[in-house]
Length: 233
Length: 286
Image: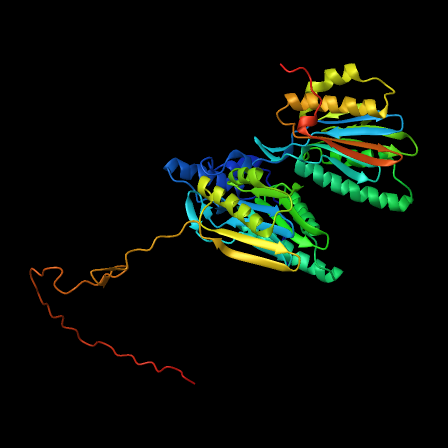
């Protein structure tokens, strides 16, 4: 009769009241509150994200880069627990790099998305990660795949994620038009992210954009004072 | 027939068998009005800044056990490798052991590659270990160093997420220190200005946060040189007690002059003792 390892609640570490000396955010997990977004266009994808990482009410990093390179022309947007998404991204980067060497050619975006999906689904109870995978490959051009919390994977022409996405579904649904140009996509993404950052407390900082196409990756940053302005109330 | 005993193989990782017992004990103790002893934490303010030639790391020196100061002058800047140092906040034992384990592994790795270790390598080892333990190792670290690719600074959280930034603060006093950084940080500072900035940031933590205190330790890492300044600044100097009063030493001297206490009565009772048994044991000096 083997003894089972007992499962116990993770809140046991907060049994003692440390409120006087140690504020809440010293014990809270770091989360990328976030608004992330990706749009397909003919010839590539445009990805965008805000730059805020929070521990409770404190902003741990106000210039985070949530657009993480997985391969030369495949990036992912991370939302959810910072530790979980960083660990998953590192693991998938390794697996995809190995796979690409075996194949001796650039990997498919769908392959990267599948690797994310496998990990997020297998460990769905332990992880808190919402990821958007986007990139360009030779077979299908620009693609956006979304892998939300729980481990589903689906391809979408435009995808938003993170806590701030709730505020911009209306804007995205009404303003998205199929067959937009690269510049239109950039403007669309920047505006959507700005609106979300304005309303969501867990999103903010700067807007980071990346355009992935056959030519490669172009990255840009839109600072706070350069964000598009909407009607001031 | 020989009896076969079942051997329970020790599986690696944490054993959570005593948690239920501990919870019951905790409840019992609380009912009596006492509180169970707390793990020693480094309340702490730690920070780091990248400047022109390298990295400056700073830390306070107070270790607390609940509301009591357990160590007034503990060292929170840990050695990782000759060119990489790491400040630790959180549970003192966790930061100490984690940095020692990674330092050890990094030395082996460095011998294997034949090169000076990189800061990014230490970062990856630390984040992967902390993620593996899902936040149960309470170590919040500021990792800094200079390697062949230049100066680097990382902040590492207990759950395993890391941020690579030009200036970072961690610990209960991090908000106070960050306020100083956000006000006065500039890219490409000179060494003296960077040291002054880190010193002021830690001082802000010491004076505005109850969990931080005592002295300020600094560690300046540049290419080929490490200045471990302990203490760099004694922010809270302990007062000196009066040494002599009327020419007689005061501190710890409990010998009083004959006649200080007046004698009222004196009784002498002789005790008659007989030698009952005498035992001589020779010492073996061979």
